[in-house]
Image 1 (cartoon, rainbow, N blue to C red):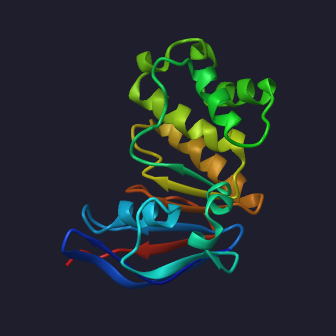
Image 2: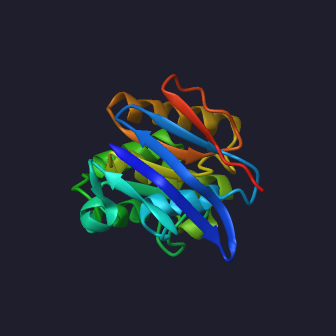
Length: 203
């Protein structure tokens, strides 16, 4: 279970939000909405432990993420605005490198994931030559192979065409069906039954 209690975040001298509370249990998706500058990315980075909150605390299964440290980080997968892929590596090599940081992943699952996301024909291409949509799909492919219980996703559907959005939504639902949890931002609506919307307001 992921919880935030009385969370406050600031940017410079400007408070973004305060007194924010949330609770996420297995099978649930939290859709964070709001205008640009409202603090959506800051909230996600704070939930990952990449940005420190000005006040409040974040708990994973009852313990603060500061107490848990790497034990907490090993339970989550984060995809931010940057795809976080290595341009000199091929699509397949990027997934193999990601797999080395998590649980053991066999080659057949990596190839199957590339095929499902329409990247199999490009698996031996340097990732830097892929289109923006293909790079985004490659970044999201790591979610499917690593199987972390908590996914934190910042605009995961950006640069994706209609077909890729439908496929990504299917992958999100499968993760939830297996008791996964998702916190995400998106300007597009996500058709998920267990979705809760958290709107952030700008001053």
